[in-house]
Image (tube, rainbow, N blue to C red; front, top):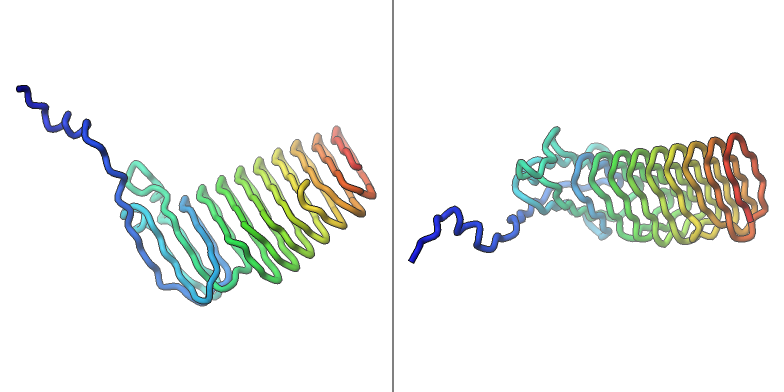
Length: 248
C-alpha cells in the first residue's frame, strides 16, 4: 500500500470555514455614527447600547471604537483591510435607542433597521453601500458621492433631500410630502416608486433621474442629463446643453 505524503493528504481533506471570533466594545451615549474602512455595519434599535464585532481574530484586533461627544466612530487601522493578511471585512452590529446621523467612507456597507427620527442625515463616500429598511422622518437628507449605492425602503418623510455626485446610484421607495433631488456626474437616481406632492430636480452631467409626483415639478437639467417624471406633474422645466426631460 502506498502512503500519501502529508501535504497531499491535507489538500484532500475538507477545509473548515475560517474561525469566527466575537469582540464586544464598551460604548454608550451616542446618536450619531461615523464608519471608516471595509467592515459591514448593521444598525438595530433597542433600549440600550451595544457594539459587537464578529470576524477573524486579525480583523477584530484592527477595529477601533471610540465615542466623542455624541458620535460613535468605527474605524480600521491604516492598511488593515487585507484578506490576504487574515484581516478581511468583519461584521459590526450596533444597537442604540435612536440614530440621527450616519457618515461612512471606504469600501464597507451599512444596513440600518427601520428608524424613526425627527431629523436624519446620511453621508456616504467611496465604494460602499447603504441600505435603510424603513425611514420615518420630518426631514431626511441622504448624500452619496463616489461609486457607492444607497437604497431607501419604506420612506415616510415630510421632506426628503437626495444629493448624488459621482457614479453611484440612489433608489428610494415610499412617500415624501416634498422631494428634492440634486444629481451630478454619471450616477443615477430612481425615486419613481416614491409618491410626492412637490418635486424639485437639479440634474447635470451625464446621469439620469427618475421620479413621480402629484403636483408641482420644478426641473433644471443641463449637460446631457436625462430626467423622467411620471404621475400627474405640473411641470416647470429649464434645460441647457443636450439634456433631455420627459415630464408627464
